[in-house]
Length: 190
Length: 291
Image 1 (spheres, one colour):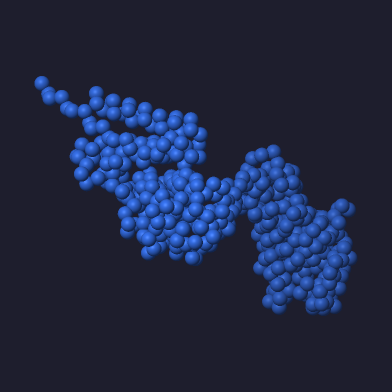
Image 2 (cartoon, one colour):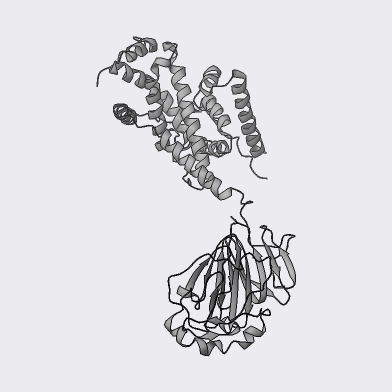
């Protein structure tokens, strides 16, 4: 495998231009530059590693197929996040329908608790498990917004762009989720 | 006093700080290989197949859920109500536009009534059936010795003891029975057929036009003698001049015909000759034409 240049050496815009010319190295460079961020977000939201693999592959496949549609090559990071969240949304919708038809009874194999770092304390793990149960009861859009903001640490602008909604909508969804989590934690502490 | 539990730990923001990275090198490589493989052999679009499947499913659902308001149920009376035993004299109008006129002493019983078929039993007497042409049901009239099958026509069936008579005013009927020549006869407008105990008469044809079987020929005179009860229940006959049988004997017309149809001027079937059969003439006294 070829060694990729340092991150600051070549920007996304240049890689996109080269990928558009059919440069396979540039495509892989783009992939490696963004796959970690996309994979982490997708895996934690989707909750199934197999589904997450499909979503990540489909995301980059769509991106490379429609690379010519990207008007600002430098905006590849936000664009790939938007594609990924659209794929996640489709996957969650499909799962919802399959569950309604009793064709999908699998529980997710990935949770925040299962992803806890090795050095995480038992209290942190317990808190993550509690958060998992709470997030499972949230609407998909609300959960996605909250997780992108408070689990992945994306900025509000990035969350709004990735979800294809306005900044105000993104804020409202995140606040709704935060309020519910706070209310739950308050009720538990009493 | 219970010791107070400590507050749960605050999770960092972002929470990813206490989570493992899910994109390890092995996974990244595997995903990239998958992407390259799929780029090399692009998956065919499933949209057409999916659209066809959805259209098929929609069609099936539509077929299942489509209201069957136009599908007829069992035959019913025109004013509503189920079909039941009908005694004459009575005129019965049915919901499909058909009409049954029962004469004095007639009785019609429904044997079967569905969306596609209706079977009525003429238990006794004489009844006129006006079956709506093109209707959804196949009509059958049982008259003891014969079955009249019809789609849309006007005809009369009369039943006596051991005999029956079918007269067709309009359309075509098929008469089936053990005593019908070839077990089935097609009657068109103006035709009439009498099926008795060894006796068959077809209006509009000369005596002997329909050939009975050899066995029936042999036993015809014997069986004919067992017809007084049937004759008694028939309409009065008009005096007829003696006729010659195919054997060259002269026989009274009253003996020749097992029954004679009522002679009303409104009966279009009377006196018409519609068909001839190239078959041997009938024996004397066995059966006759009503023309």
